[in-house]
Length: 509
Image 1 (tube, one colour):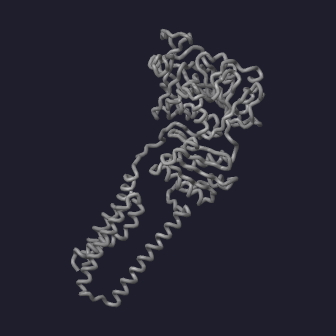
Image 2 (cartoon, rainbow, N blue to C red):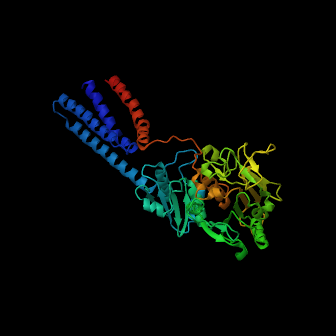
Image 3 (spheres, one colour):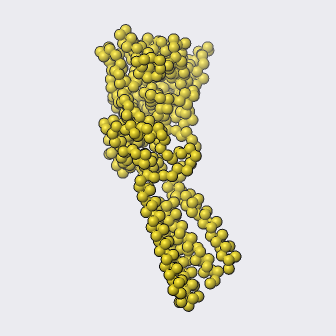
């Protein structure tokens, strides 16, 4: 037989045997697999024609039996392999060959699965081409293989926008809803760690955030620029329940409070309320205070023991103060963040944080616990003593860059009837940053949600709300991913295999 026919036969055999691999690696573009099958059949047909002509149409009985049996075995292997792969895929079976078993459900997750009190339902709101959709599906399959009773539904928000709006899922909100009974948690990233944390919270207590009222604080409603309806939706989108609390009437902070929000109070707390709040912090309570310039007399008595104080005066940043986007008022842009987990990566993410009519934050030595600044204005900013003044002038003896947000924390693990192992207080010298208009700035939204998540979380690994990346990644389209897999898993091996078979055949001949 000629070398051309032999080479065509080898090429046809390789193409036909590797066509299933091509189909698996580039199922989004089936044209590659179809082209392989067609070319393989043509090459095999050429070899068969030359073989028939060479034997003059005569095939021995032993040869014909050998060909038939070989074809049967080949067909049986292909069918059996396909059935085996399909059954393993449907059952979620995976053979993890990585050294750290990164594709296997961890023992801690298995323990949570064993403690599940009810079936779990997961809804993922991802478009058809998003990689996170596939990652979530694979993760659920691994959990099912570990014995979890979990149902997954993937919804394309582009095709079903009404369903997405009904679930309060927007472009910047978490897109993974984890439900167990009548309880719900929301996640941003489809990772085993985040899902395990959601399972732990669903099996534990409900996270409810109480908003303090009774001293002129605004309610979380109103759709205009000065309203606070959007922050309420954002917090609900993070899986938090919201409720209002009047300490003067209730007399104590409810047992199920994950955190308290105190936004722009106009008058100080009463003596009874101060005692209730102090007791709450002594046993591991969590509190966020957001108040702008002029609110220091109302705020400071409540947090005096923490060492955090709302300074008098108004922070003026010449770069943004008086601009049309802040209504001509004084404002400050955050110019520096610390390395605290709440804000450590906001600067790297390039998120803009703008505070309107902010008050400076002062930090003195606390009676217990420790203080941590979060964000500061630029070095050109200063504190204007007269809050009502419309003429701003930097004093010659201006101090260092004013602090705009800070934290206090204290260990309460030794307290017997504690609410948490650590008491936490966050103070932000502005309340307008969480208004509907303020949340238009991505940095304002990230700062507010990160603080609330840090306060309401029971551990140090809380959900970071800022849209950022912890690792460098290469994002490819579906076609690019398909062609890359085709090249690595199919093209390169064939480029090595086919020349090797040709050399082997020539030496054999």
